[in-house]
Amino acid sequence: QVQVMESGGGSVQAGESLRLSCAASGVTYISYRTTWFRQAPGKEREGVAVIYFPSRLKFDAEPVRGRFTISQDDANRTVYLQMNNLKPEDTAMYYCAVDSTIADMWYRPSSYSHWGQGTQVTVSS
Image (cartoon, rainbow, N blue to C red):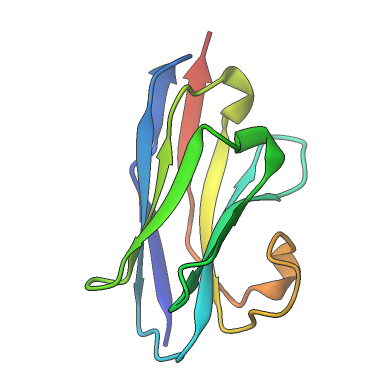
């Protein structure tokens, strides 16, 4: 059974950085993708960045391009989201999701079967 757990959220000032971690256990897929989503109050859940295993192919959303970087440590199946130059509009609950479906649109939440509980990121101005 796949289990996903996020960590690393917190409260920071605008311009500061945070690194989120996503630890996945029980993953036996030969190929899969891990995606960070976020959801602000009153808004829909949106895809932030994705990384594919084993290709390491990455995509990210335009609002975070150039500020956020997704990476993966293959040894421990942990995916990181390095978030630099954070802005108040980045404030949201951040979720990690894992799925073996790699052909569908990566930013579509309905494509994912395994989700973590989320970690809160709050950025104040």
